[in-house]
Image 1 (cartoon, rainbow, N blue to C red):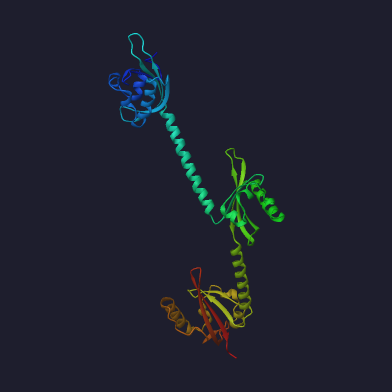
Image 2: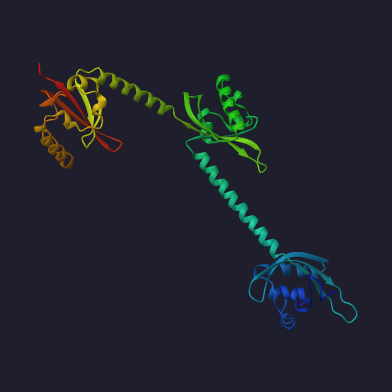
Length: 370
């Protein structure tokens, strides 16, 4: 039974030297019977575990313990480590037989590897969680989590700063406890859409903050449990209040510019750096006889007499290459060409701007025949 037991069984004298070990224990360490009996438990115990093992053995010898259990590492013959759980008892001396230690040794290396892997995974998870926490807390966006009933589970620093609230004032509360009836109803309606659709969705929402009304794009998304059930809703809020103001101001400016250009008595045309016409106002039709749709994409030189076109194209290319103008861009008198072939005098002023990486040229052309 001793020799064929599946678990390691070993005996050692008071000096710690082995005098009996079954095949399971020998196979664990990789030693033959002869090799093992020349060694003590101290010599095969992993260096970092020796002190704790010796201390327990001393307490056993001094009668402070009847037995002890320890998890320790052995150094195998090939140098690798073996994790074991070992139960050691002192067998008292009998007639003609000195006291000795009796140990039962279980190989737990596989379990330890699993434990180490779990610890590593837990460590990585905690690191990942800490990184996410740092990201959320330092994000310029407002970030929140709500449960299915709409109670806040988490809000980041930006959220608390925008609403001037502390954790205890918002965690566990619903929107109707934090916002006006109209605002909270809109927020909760959007939450219900996400719960019903079970997909991420975007909404434009408004909220009253300390410095006034703010408009935001809110990206809301469901969070799923391992069973595939939605247990919470997450939200990332991007404040677009300033962008809205800028867009409104830009639209006003563009509308004002459009009205000004469309009601001008002068022809207004825009062309790119290839000379292709991009825009022509209604006065262009009256002055040159072309409908604006006939001019789009056509070369600007079609509005000039034949003898001027080569001069214009050469000078224009030189300007693009060198920045040197071949004529005055403000109030220069030239000759225009009507759709019916009639030439007439014009006064032209030019301007240039760069838009989305393209050079755009705009000309104001006045018929000065009268």
